[in-house]
Image (cartoon, rainbow, N blue to C red; front, side, top):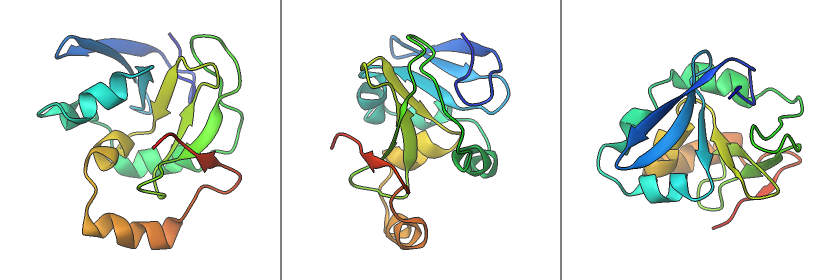
Amino acid sequence: MQCPKCNARMYEITYKGITIDRCTECRGIWFDDGEAERLRNEWMSEFLDDGDPKVGKEYDAVEKDIFCPRCEKPMDRLYDLKQHHIWYEACPAGHGKFFDAGEFTDWIYNTVFDRIRELAKGKRPGGKPGPG
């Protein structure tokens, strides 16, 4: 599978019986439908997100069309309802979602610092809220 952000090769990693896809270049993570939510509460799952958050921020700012690696439809640009500074892409057909490096770890932890980041970054321009 190719990365929807940088088109590099992705490889599979299995944790707690759930297989995700991680990019060899940008270190973004593809989660098939429901996998991110299932892993969110699993102990130590943040270690799946081993990419540099600075690199993730660079890719997060890319405004090109991103296509679902499963169905090749343009993905929706969303922001998290509880943490508006977390911007991610999701397949409109429900195949899954893509987090840039560092975003999955940030998504797992909702801290006071996240509130400060939310004020600085805000909701995704042109994006819509993801499922709560």
